[in-house]
Each structure stands twice: as C-alpha cells, then as structure tokens.
Amino acid sequence: MPEEPQDVTPNPTDGSQDVNSQSNLDRQIDIQNQAPPLPTEPIFSQPTTAAAPISESMADQANSYYTTPKKSKKILPKGLMIALIAAVFIGGGSYAAYSWYENPQKVVTDSLMNIVTSKTSIYSATLTSEQDSDNKFVIDVTLKKPAEPVFGLDAKLTYNYQGESYVVKGAAQSDNDGNLYVKFDQLAELTAKVKDELAVGLVNFKKTTDAIDKLVQKIDGKWINISAKDLSDYIDDASETQTCTNDAIKKFQGDKNQIKEITDLYNDNQFIVVHKQLGLKSGKYDFMLKSDGAKLDNFVKGLSDTKIYKALHKCNSSFEISPDDIVANEDASEDGTIEVWIDMWSHQLTKINLESKAGSSKTSLMIVPQFNQNFKINKPSSSITLKQLESYLKDITDAYTQDVSAFYSKYDTYSDL
Image 1 (cartoon, rainbow, N blue to C red):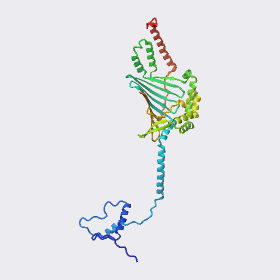
Image 2 (image 1 turned 120 degrees about the horizontal axis):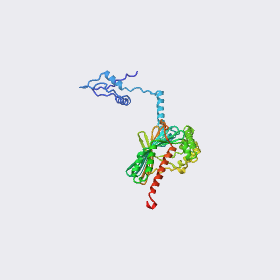
Image 3 (image 1 turned 60 degrees about the vertical axis):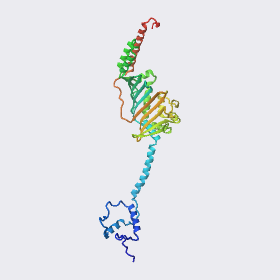
Image 4 (image 1 turned 90 degrees about the vertical axis):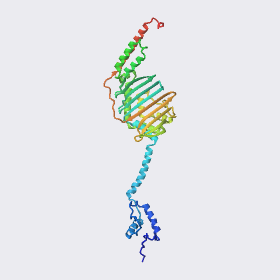
C-alpha cells in the first residue's frame, strides 16, 4: 500500500524544513509569475508580539492557494482565433493600403485628377509683382466655374507708385448663349485722382475731360453686354465659335469616357513631380513641386488624340497646343518655386503658391481653390450694349479732336508753340 502523504508544512517554532520545501518554493515562484495579482490584503495577519503557532486550518488555507495546478491544454475558441488572424492580416493590409494612399506622388496626382473631375470650382487668387519699393501692383481675382459652361470673375487691381495708390475693380461673366458681360467699379475715384495729378497738362483739354467724366458716369458700376452677335461683327464666325466651344466643354464635363482619356493620359505621363516633402500641418500635406520635361512633352503630344482637344480644335482652328509652347520648371531652383497644400484625407488641393525672382523684381501668385460647392451665376438684369459704349467713346474722341484743334488755332505756325 502506498504511504500516506506527509504534512510538509514548516514548523515556525523550531525552523525545521521538509526535504521538498525547496521544490515547493520553486513552484510558488512560478505560480506568482503566471497567476493573477495576489490579493491586496494578506491571507493571514502578522502577530503583533511573539510569533504564535499556525493552526492547521490556516496552514491548509495557505497551501491550498500555492498548490501547483494541474497542467491542461488551453485552446482558444475558434471564433477568437479567427478574429486574431483577421486582425493581423487586416491590420497589416490597412497599413499597406494607408501607406499606398498617402504616397506623396499619389497624393499630388489625386489632387490633379480631382480638379478634372470636379463639377464646380472657385479659385481665389492674388498676383503680386514688385519691381522695387516704389513700384508694386497687386491683382486679386476670384474665378467661379459652375457646372454649366459659363464663368464668373471678380477682380481688383491695386497699383502703388511713388507713394500713391490707384485702385480699380472689375467683373466679367458669361451666359449659356455665349454673351459676355463686363463691369468696372470705382472709376470715378480713379479718374478724379488722375485728373488732379495731370491738372497742368489737361488745362487745354476741357472738352475731353468733360467727355471722360460723362463716360464714367454712364458706365461706372454698370454691366456692359458684349453679345455673341457683337463679337461676330468684329471677329468672323465668333458667335459660331463660342457656341461650338460651349457645347464641346459641356459634353466633356458630362462624358466619363472623355474625362478618363485625360486622366489616363496624365497617369501615363505624370509630369508634375514631388520635389520636396515639407511636412504635415493642420491635416494638410505641404509639397514643393517641379515638372518632368520629357513627360510634359509626351502629355501635350497625347492631347492631340483626345476627343476634347479635337472638338475644341474643330470649333476654332487656331486653338493648338504644342510642346514648344510649354516651359517646364525642372530645376525647381530658388529663383522659381511651386508649393502646394493638399488635404490628407480627400486629397483635394487646398492652396498653391508660386514665386519667382529676376534681379530685384519679385512675383508671386497664391491660389486657394474650392471644389464642388453649390452656387449659380445669375445673368445681369440690366446692361449697356456694346453699340452704346461705342457712341460714348466716340464722344471722347470727338471732344479730343476739338480740343487739339482749338489749341493749335491759337498759333499761326508751329514755330510759335
């Protein structure tokens, strides 16, 4: 018969140890490393004075806690195993997809394709040219392009010269019938300032200055309608050309195959290249760009085979694009830079900044685009015809002729001047 197991509980009074106590200690250490954290409160309290013998029940309680559990195979549930495997593969795949989606060249290419495929667009631009501290002009422009083949434009020109500032505002828009409308604002303020500065020279041109004032009163802040028929009087087939062009553009915007022609052509010839990565700020990628001359040439050559190019060329035979007309910015030098900001999620272009230097002169162009906004361009309710404008201008030329004639009539010969 096998012997009964011996009680190996250590006796605290005499300090003796069982021969298996060391192996029990090893087991205890292993269990502590594998098991959940031990209770925060001790299993049995420490004596406040002299050590007292541990009762059998207390010893049994301690040994039962530290007894080595039986080894058993632990198999994860099938559903949990599948979830873990899926997490590994999906997680790794997501990272790979994210890395591909955020590839700098792809980000830039997507932003350009979004321009082509956008239904509407608004471009707010500021062009600044500074020759020196006394000679600077700034043009602020907002160009709106709705879904229809029309456009709207607002502009402001500010010219600073030798401490004086000259400002004029203007606007232009078209309609579905091929008519063009233009408008000038703040002409009265501009002409008054010019007259003050040229007062001495205008003394003998009273009729001319009066005619100019009348013209300003008639056209300042008013739309001038240049109809398709008016254009045809000055340019042969202008009306037919404009109508044909509008129809071609409208058809292109609604034809996915034509759009795909352009996007595929660019994807095969990505001539806009990331030159420098300048970081990520406020959810926008900042890139410095340059162009690949060889790919740009191939892209321009390929345009001649697209449906939209053929349609536009058919409308106007003078409409041609040649690689010789395009200059590639391959060097991306400090004298000329192109910097763009692109949204990291939508890959929509959010800002463009171009700068160039030539000696002491500096030129910069900043463009802030918006895409797929809902807006309409309303046709002006009233306008001046081009024929009316011609009659106003004729009044000025007639007045100028009279002033010149009166000026020279004061003298018998030119030698008396």
